[in-house]
Amino acid sequence: MSFSEELKNRKIIADKLPAEGEPDSPSMKYYTTLKNEEIDPLMHTKKTGCAGMQLNITTHNGSPCRYLSKGKIKFKSVEEAIRNEEIQEKEIFTEIYDKMSAINQGYFTDGAFIGIPANYEDENMISILNTGDSDFNSRNIYRIGAESSVKILENFIITGESNISHGTVIRMGENSSLDYYFLEDVKNSKVSYVERTFIMPRYSRLRIHHLSIPGSKNITRFRVIQEGEFAESYYYGATLGKRNEHQDLEVYTHHLAPHGNNDTSFKGILGGDSSIIFRGFIKIEEKALNTDSFLLANLLLLSKEARGNALPVLEIYNGEVKAKHGETVSNISEDELLYLESRGLEPKKAKKLIIEGFVNPIISPLPPEIAERYLDIVEDVVDNA
Image 1: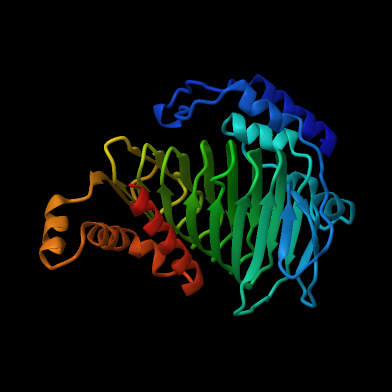
Image 2: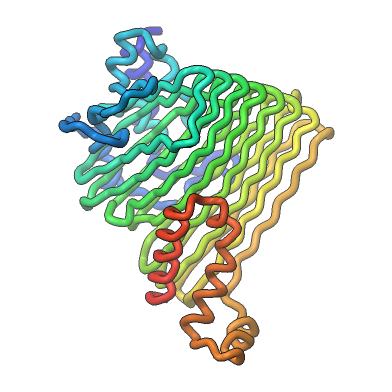
């Protein structure tokens, strides 16, 4: 099937899928209300282009900017990468699992390709900056060569009140390692859909560090597909809601091969009348013997108006695995506050220390400059709680 035919088929699927649906499995139902007027702009976006030389890898409204570098990393548009036969057209597409995924795959108008060669190793991070100030729908591919050890820091900053859809497929090479730091700052967006799909062959290792500052309606999907044996993945994530933001986050890990390992840990801090839906999904296939996969989600509510839901889903099709999950939704302990205040701390300072302690397991592995920025945001949340 040609690229144009595949794209046409995916547009048909996107058109047919309802904005809200009730699939057979309750765990897969749509929990975030979507309106047609919020979705339609994503089906009519256009390329805006991006000019100028950049020290970092940069995209603007989905269009790749030029990249100033002496390294071996390739950075160009998806269109050019297909034309040069650096990627196959089918690599752009993955499984469609909801309306927003279908729109991203059927109606994207732009996208970037990043190619990292085999045996690449550099202590310095590859910095990717995604900016936007208008509606856009893009789909990207990052490819990491075999035996490579890579660190990627990806920032997502939206400055305009726009509707955005940004999907990326990250294909790892055999025995490669990726530390992926993703700072999602979309607080100025109307509707934001961000999707990251990681394809892991055998002996690959992945660590995801995800920090989210959501907008008024933010839908984020991380999908980790362990296709090869002895694949190892970790997700450490945190979301901060200050006022009336809404975060719909799913972390999906699919074990297809034996001896896989996974650890998912999420923290949500909600102030004002913000809300979050966290869905942790682990699926272990019949052939994925001797798999270890764990899920933990903790939500901390700072106000009476804040709302949080943590929904664990485990689908296991063989008996030779280790899998478990744990979820909590709670308020700040009055006993802890009283204890700290009795030691001379002001109420606001005491609350800040408790929140920092709550989120510290997620923040502590981060580079200092990112951790400091996020702790500043924690203080802002406390001030508005």
